[in-house]
Image (cartoon, one colour):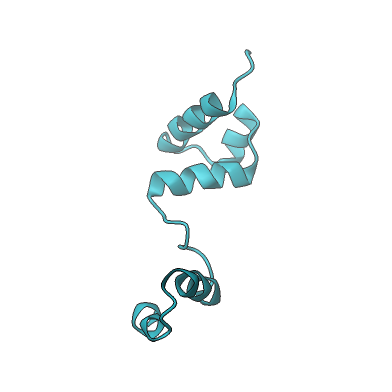
Length: 77
């Protein structure tokens, strides 16, 4: 088997994810870590950077971008 570079591995991982392969199967096949496969999977699902983070983390991200505390209550509730 030939050695794949990072972009080739990512492309193959996307293909395998679409075929319904598990993270473990993909990891064993193309030697990617579970976290890398998770990142690729989240990209395919269209998740944004802040999804999956705690409420406090999302609040901090919003405060650092917007700097208007009254907007947090509207967005987080």
